[in-house]
Image (cartoon, rainbow, N blue to C red):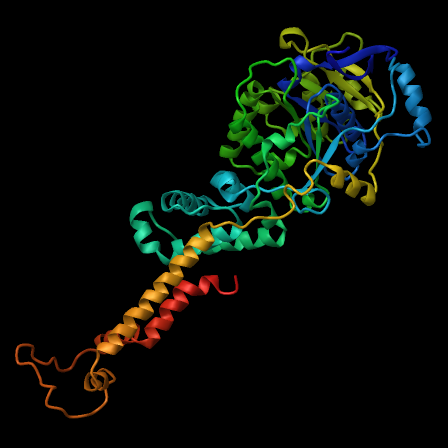
Length: 514
């Protein structure tokens, strides 16, 4: 069993060892089952097994229970007796308690080291999904990203994107000739969605220093892989942010990692909990992207495991690529439930000893219907498996214990302080300040060049002077329209002091209070 991640015991008396071959662990997997059937413990023992085998792991702690991975289980735990009994039943002779190497991460920076990326790295497709934009609004977002590249405007944080959108609105007429209609209403809608994202705490996700993928793929001096645990209990209040962040991280792994073919063991195993959030109401372009990543990231040495209540939550094209399966009990109260249960059972290679459909309905807590890939990637026969007990603590650790782990981590201090280097916001602000300054200088120069009499004439005051005559080459137009008079007045105001104030208001108002 040295080449396997030990899962538990199968067979009629649960004495037959069941394991997941590391060679096929990058062929992806599925952990499914109703609430309270043991999915979290299965996730915990898989993380332990991969870590012990030298494989780094990334997973999200949706309920806050998985922080116990950082602490050893103890003999005084209330389940110590049942754990030892189960270990004896499944033949887990070398079962012992131990802690795992854990690094805590948190988008909000409260329960773990901060996680950041830049707006540019997120890209318009995922950002449009995060903001729930319409097709027209997504088009404006694509224009913003194109202009940022052409104008040399780095998009690092949300204020960079917000300021660029304002600039696009001010120049919409010229931009519409090149990119099509640029609607102020669409820009306003995007700005409102960005405000909602800020109120949800999402602004902390964007900025620098951005996360380095290498920090997720560390192996300790003892040969164990690092378990990267994302605190997601608070993050689940913004499910769109949660799903988009995990998809971004998966996409970054896909884009940046080199091809490795079929390694002896994965370079990283990625667990995507609450996977249904990724696919709920997702546009086809996004689902296609997930399918592409799932299909091709295997050759990068990354295994992806989706965790959800029902296999039907995962699109069929993606579900067909999940070779290693852990199916906990499904409830069948309605006709739809029974249909989904039957469909789930049909995806397994049958075992003559029992009915797969009945087994999925009947397995108890801590038991699962499993199927692992065998030689040449062939699906194994379905088996009822009693999941092994965890070696780390079952349940969360205390706040003080978490802070102690964070303080001792190699990541301590690396991402804690945000950086705010020159980017789109600062560049556009500098342009606005320069334009206002040039307008002020031009007005001052014009005022200095005026004679007192000409200044009075421009101010429309009554006076008489021989230097003011009526030209005979351009006859006076009598009865000029009210519209023409208003136009002349506006032009005059724009060239005067009021005009200077207006320029400063238009170009500088965006940055007031920043």
